[in-house]
Amino acid sequence: MRAVAELLDILDLEQLELNLFRGRSPRARWQRVYGGQVIGQALVAATRTVPPERRPHSLHAYFLLGGDPRVPIIYEVDRIRDGRSFTTRRVVAIQHGRPIFSMSASYHLDEPGLSHQVPMPAVPMPEDLADERALKASVMPLMPDPVRAYFERERPIELRPVEMERYTARVPREPRFHVWIRATSPLPDDPAVHQSVLAYASDMTLLDTALAAHGRTVFESTIQPASLDHALWFHRPFRADEWLLYAQDSPSASGACGFSRGLIFTRDGTLVASVAQEGMIRERREPVPDAE
Image (cartoon, rainbow, N blue to C red; front, side):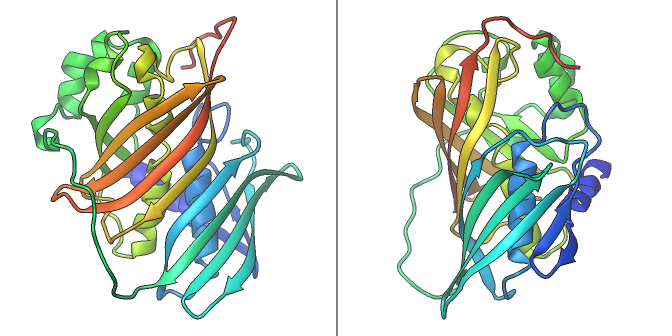
């Protein structure tokens, strides 16, 4: 409950002026701000300048500089266009007088139309996978220290990976990764909250999928990971406090960059969102000590 309450507090930006908002980072031992936090906060800033009957259907973002978790982030919203059906916003996140992140988001009035979707992959349901207690008792002792430290923390998003074995054995695998995700306690009924929480969660495991083909993970001290850009499309309504399957794959990695895609389904197989990201997966010449 505490972790989700803190996440909702972090996403509840302070309004400084008409198009100006201020966000903060959690008190965690991170050297830079988590990318999903900036995406979620930027989406909140943009959404607060849009009529409530218009919902976000897509966002496209670039990470420009690593964020400093010690100081607030200022979000400046540019009201680019207010059309009859679509609304467009641009958000720039600023720290120390410099842009660290930029995002364009488009909003749309709900309207009827043609509909189709791809089927959800056939994977075990979340209740058939190891829960947090079982992971701590069986799988976590086999994990590398940085991976174990991450999963032992209290987190606002619960993860139940389908292919958990990739974290316990350094073996090249098909570049696909499936993980069930949900908020660890109930969220308010406001759809905007669920969209911003999913935006926050969508950056958690996507870049790591690009390393599966090489038997590596972003938790290794020999890997220098960083999200470079991020795109998210909302297709249908959902709740982020109910189980969602995040089905990810990585078609390509080259030049120290990995490209990954993700489809997000409800447990009944409804496709609710799609994600794409390119990120840096640079190998360090001199490994840094594992963070606590």
